[in-house]
Image 1 (cartoon, helix red, strand yellow):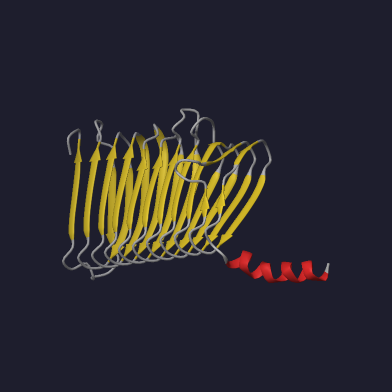
Image 2 (cartoon, rainbow, N blue to C red; image 1 turned 45 degrees about the vertical axis):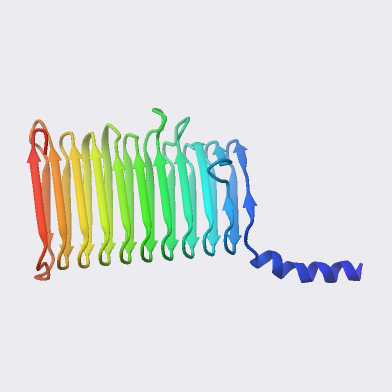
Length: 272
């Protein structure tokens, strides 16, 4: 017995810090509480071929990956009134989430927190017509990160806070109405592309830094943009298409540091 206990003690450090672990998960039910921690490098929760699938209502899901080159590929098929959090600490981590692929995710909240460089997030909500509403918060701190977020539902809310340089952020809202984006960008040489299609889309953004490239396209009617920016050599391009001419774009330069910047705003009935 003593020999067995000694062996277990020796194994514990190896298990705690090793990488290359794989988890495959299929869970269906109401009221699930799920917590997964993967510590080390090259861990995986599901893959593009064998995904982690979760379905149910009133769920609480907390996923943490600490280390480099970790992968998560999760399908949250149906998750009304649920909360899920994913945190990536390290470099070159890749996360893919498909949310609301078969059912409703109304009243749900998703939080993404990344600290490191060259991390990738692909998040899609609402390929099923019933996947209404949803709130997403994206907090990214580091360089050369890539975030691709698509929301195909009514009443989608995206909040993102990005600090660092040379990141690429693409956000698309394609639901019929009443979606919002609130963003804070701090850093240099970032590329941000925002596409909002449908009616009554709102964008509120604060941008601080130099050589950032921001492209905003809004199609439909009754859209608003409120952007506050400071920094030099900024490139801001805004297109608002509205057949009844009711869009609003409000840009405010915080200081005199906007030298060398280029701002282009087009508001038209079609074909901006």
